[in-house]
Length: 227
Image (tube, rainbow, N blue to C red; front, side, top):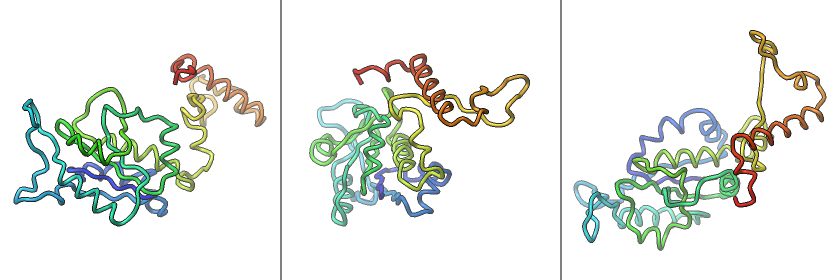
């Protein structure tokens, strides 16, 4: 998979993409992540990417030209399955969406800033808008990093245990069951006996039961047919 991220602050991705799962995916050549500075496609001495909104009002708007040029330069080289704009207006990122996006070959993720981007980019170029929650951040970089992590970890071969992602929270609309490790008894706090039994079928049944109970208690909406 190749992910092209368009931003005016490429340095914000140095930390998230230099460690852990994403770093491993890049080293294994299972995922390519390329950062593109939108300012490189701006004109003028100051490489300006924002301007005042037509009709007045507070704030600045990211201009259409540098964004369109940046996207066009990428589209000239390959086809993209999705051109995603990170926006609080978008569809809420969930596990089914991450699962679906992990099957794509080429994705563009556009990070907005200021009061947003020129609406014509959303109308004519963007194919999907994604939100990470009902709140506003300073820009789309952190949401883009979240989306990238959620998707890349699902690519076959990225995780050490191929079954690990299948047992994560929100797969099958259930939260993950409780997990424990050594020691089995710490200050009198004991691991459930079933997990020490060695009986795989009964352990699997216990874990499923705990997932259902935890979901009912903490996130009952996940079990609703309305989602």
